[in-house]
Image 1 (spheres, rainbow, N blue to C red):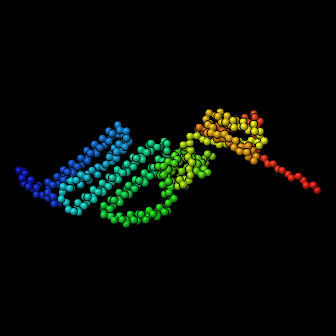
Image 2: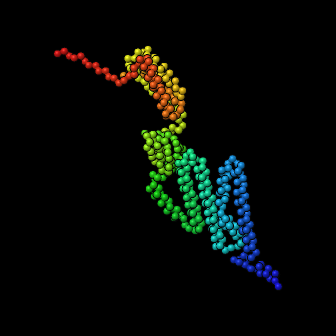
Image 3: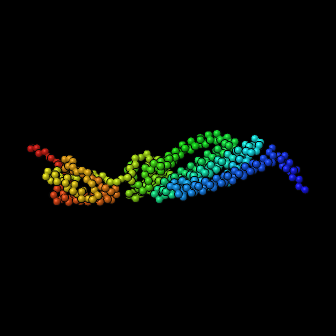
Length: 361
């Protein structure tokens, strides 16, 4: 016959590692309860964030939260549950230290996974938004994101080693000295890398911009980690290091809304005054006849050594260079026709040589 009292007494008096059986059962119950609670909390957070992502304006951020929470690992929840159950027990100091160290390591690993996932998702979001308009910056940001992920795992690895009892001070010092040496050896590469980040963040120019750097000009084709590449008007590719590029004065024509044109016309010195008075009106009429041109000023500027000089300034209301050249061509032909009708000659370089009279012998 089954002796219930005997087994109950045995159960109450039996001990394992200094804890009675009923305390182990309580610890097991706490661990199971915490495991279930963490699972429920994870599910609720995912569903709630997904619901907000479906209807909120900032749906991208809630979708990001869903994906990050979904990266919560089962072993992370298991270790937290075991740690919570261990708090009920009276364990040796060494066992407590092992459990605490293992828990801290697991928490650090899970934190690194969350951080890594956040970086990956943020870069993916940026790539989707910018790929069609600025593919080069996507490449650069992806590279910077990789460096960020490496930094996250490096920091977590050092923290894990420190909690595991490894002396990391000398290791960090050695890495610091090695980093300085590497930095000195690769300072040009690092300068270009940081310059690339500056270009991506500050955006002095983007893909498709026409820029002038010193005596070189071209359309931006690629912004890389180390170099930026332009397509020159003459067809060849110009390659600049990013560090050198940011140290130069850059003229960016992206925001150019209209072009200012200044030109001069020189007529012969012997042109009568009555005809000189007609020339500003001729120039003004020639410019005003163009629908995309706006006159600023027209003046008889100076009496030169070999010509009468007239100066005109006008604006082309479209930035396209071909439009500007078409208008300038039309203006030049119109002025030339009006001068011909008025029998006014353009000046050409001349020199007057005065010879002294020959001396009588």
